[in-house]
Length: 242
Length: 321
Image (cartoon, rainbow over all chains, first blue to last red; front, side, top):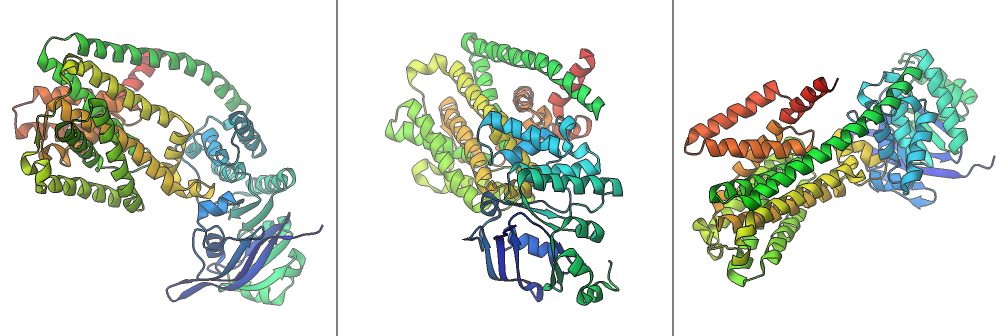
């Protein structure tokens, strides 16, 4: 596999008043891989996500996506270039049907009406929501809601799909289903995936590479096997919540 | 999962069945109002019909911006701008009547675009307060400009004499057309995006839609409709003054929407119709009118959370089974 970089973050920093939430962070996401972003609470994972998806402007540093400089672009502009994210909590259109949720996702990506309908059905099918198209999103069980929030992002046909804590709050059965789904998404759509999660075992299982953050800085980067045995990482996690 | 499939398979059938009854009844209702407007010899009745039409557009326009989750009290300002611009066109420049109406709508649209660009970054109560202030500031501005008559306003705003007998029907047609146009927008994909923004604007942003410009479009469309209605208002009443365009106008429109029911455009129309007639019956009651109105809003909120439309729908649902 020749892996060219899709997203390159260079010396990325984000300051909130006196707090340097992300500090001189550099990493890259390579085409076709699943990259995990892990770290103890408050390590800057969510801030990093918000910066690369355009919800925060970086205080300094550069971001490029598919060779184009996207530093300081708006969230919608970045999304139109193919970087689409999900949110940690309840990223759903609660009062709308499952069908309309996914349709909103597909609105920009698929222009012709009939193709869009097919795309909505296919996406729902892939995420196990095929029989629930008419259901109201807010009334779905938790696991289905999670899959729906991924479906919305996926319907936008992303080149890079960024999943913010897709497994948090799911039980072990639901996690197994979710992991299987993420794998299938990767295979069927050739989507590159970047994800943040606390579930260490799941992250180790699904990711090709992992970037570990601590205090806003990169602590380590490598394959799951490498990360698992890195003394720095072990030290950062001891006494923490992992 | 299989049981869910069976449920959804049966749903569309009954839904299309009912969907055919709705437009039929609506068309019948609109046609009878139009016939009434054309045929009634009573001048008082004619005015009542026109008043209902204008209030319906006000309510539907306010509801249209509610679709993206914002309470747009500036509806009153754009109504007033439409009225003043059209009145000036007719009285000072002798512009043909249709063009005066169009000018009212267009200027209201332009001003709303500028207003929206600056204010739509604010949301919820903040936007509501700004839009409230804008309506009141516009009212004060009218009083200070001598060219548009200051406190006494503009008099002698007449439609062409040949149109006089047709004004009630024309008003019903135009107002109905504006309501229908906004409803068609709501039913399109654009309307879905409006609702999505109301639900969760961050998601809409992440799938590549610029939320700000969609909200601006929503405001502009609503303001065009209400600008044309304001232009009609000037030509129906023949006199306008700043007091006609205070914050009370959009607040009453909000009452029409909430009491009529905000889940469907016809709820707003129903509310406007009913409350306009009630207000007419209470005419002369002075402050009592406003007290009763306030009471009705509170009662509707408590007893009919989705308004008369929602209550009617529930009742029909019970009868249908």
